[in-house]
Image 1 (cartoon, rainbow, N blue to C red):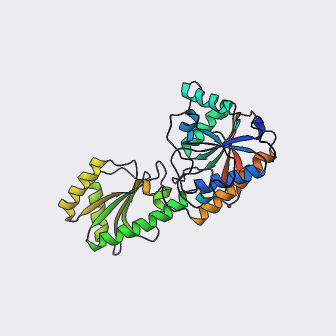
Image 2 (cartoon, rainbow, N blue to C red):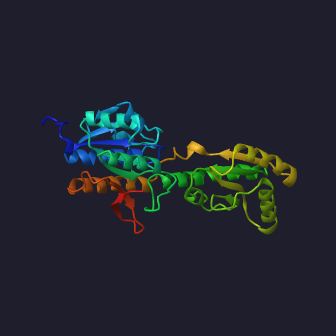
Image 3 (cartoon, rainbow, N blue to C red):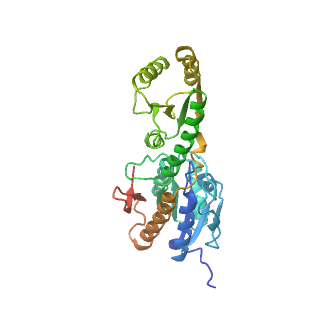
Length: 321
């Protein structure tokens, strides 16, 4: 067996999962490990994302099959974390740089969302070659049609909302359900499926007072024949006090019970859809082929990200936002 040469900067590459987890991260990770090692790269992993890089939790992969059993599993077997916003002049960011260089790592692949890609841009400015595969249930990148994890979360939400609809109807009650999505309404809009919520509130709408919402629901009850007793709300618009006041006002003015359900991390732990499994595998293959075949990407201060174009073709683009 040939001895692994970890001193070869061109052949050392590190993979991290970063920020909020998304279904399909394990599939991407495992696909990358196989494809990279088949192309004679020395693959390292960072445990717990950027926090792990700061704490020097960097390990080489010796067996490309080590994580294979987790391919279909949600979450991320190498863990993830929230970390500070990277800054070239920040001491913690400098420590990350020093830790990477101590392992002779120049190339980095980041699996994550908006914040993680922004961290990647900072690392490129520090001289690293950085690549990304977009993983977020928010699906909030305008450059791509679908981020890995988004469809899994939306499909799972459809099942959860259907269950909540059944029990609300059984009690002649209404259920307000808050979904994730951060600043993007994609997840909310694609979680409804065939349901007919009486009201949907996203950041594309006006921000309503409690009384305005009551009036909207009154009008809809009187004007439409078929509806489901669900109020679907995008996160980060209304707070807990607003919800509590709405529950009280609902009882007083509509004489109906209103339940509040915040799905929160249930969405991140959604079973991985076949679509996301295939997209993860294909994205990994496209990215590794790009890394292998490109000889002019060193020290360009550019980050490269795989996108799923609107014609469903994958390509690697420069990411500089």
